[in-house]
Image (cartoon, rainbow, N blue to C red; front, side, top):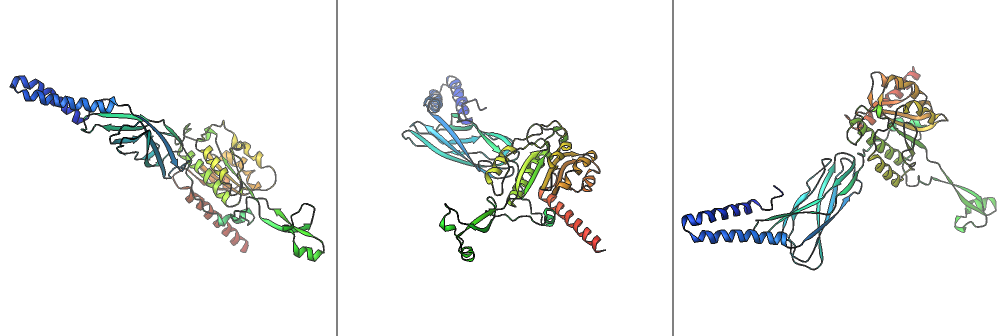
Amino acid sequence: MRSWPLTLRGTGALVVALGCLIAAPMLGLEELVWFAVLLIAAVLWGAVTQFGLRRRLDATRQVVPALPAVGEDARVRVHATVHGSLPVPPGQWRDRLPRSLAGDARGVFPALRPGSGSRTIELRYGVRPRVRGIHRLGRLQVTSTDPFGLVRRSQAAGEATDVVVTPELVDVPALAAMAVQTGGALPAATSRLGQGADNLIPRAWAPGDSMRRIHWRATAHRDELMVRQEEQEAAPEATVVIDLDAARWPARASAPGGDRGFEAAVSACLSITTHLAREGFAVSVVDAHGTPLAERIDPEEHSGLGDLAFLLATVAPTGTGGGLHRLAERFTGGLTGPVILLAGSLGLSDAAPLATIAPHSALPILLTAAPESGALPAVRARGWRAAALTGAEPLATVWQELERRAAASESAATEGESA
């Protein structure tokens, strides 16, 4: 029992002492009495050293990385501080881990010699998150024994620490076979895409222009002072839509990890958004009602991706339904960039409203967790690149299947034109 302050050795010492006190008058051996007194004194001395001396412990934690993803190894550093100048005997430490974090959070707590003021030691262990969300680490439990190993003392140190676990980030391969769907212009990632690529054009010099910007070739050609004018290129836009209507997710889980299909969709939302941003797209992430879930993420905008990951760590289906049927209102204008729709259940009745979106997107992609029979062929016939994303297969495999289907479709179309 954790509440019993004696170790197995200490409990045995008390039992032997009691036996000696009972047997001594029966056997007429005075030595048994002194032996029993010695054992009891040793236990009492151990209790004094463990509980009679004031010792206060405190603990703080640092998790690296600060926002670990599902399946990503993370390191936890626990800074345990002992307040007081008395020596600290060696013992064992254990940090409480929830079931959602896999790891071995225990070890040997080293002995500390007498010293002045507070003394801090660092304890380390590794964890691997299993489920996204907010999980609590701690409190730290330190158990020590007296030098004879008779009496133990357990102390709880510090407070619990909240750890935010983001969805699994999957490396999504580039859809080279679908580049034609975006006008043959899938942009290459570059560090300059955040401000736009520079197209240098000369213009007449104006007061206030720096002399460093003089375009000497244009000045000599036109016989007047000309400077370089930088024209910004706008990044192509993409939209990632995740359906949060609770009625469309079979499990209807209110907490992260309860619906395998929804977890796959949340991971796909973060992974595809990250992929598109690295490919040079300005990405908007919205729900099926068209409500933005985060600020628009510009190309190579890493802070925006971090904010999105933090938001998706706790997102859950909460909508009231009808989102897919009203989504077409967002795409009623001209041609837009890629539209990636992450849906729950998909029925034949959804094919008609989705058919109005595909003509307005250069690359319409639909991933659904629970398609009804015949639903995927129906939306494919209306211009969507569609596949099932149930969580049974990795996102990268499903993504590559979309590319294979696109390549096969283009090959069939080419052969038809040749015939």
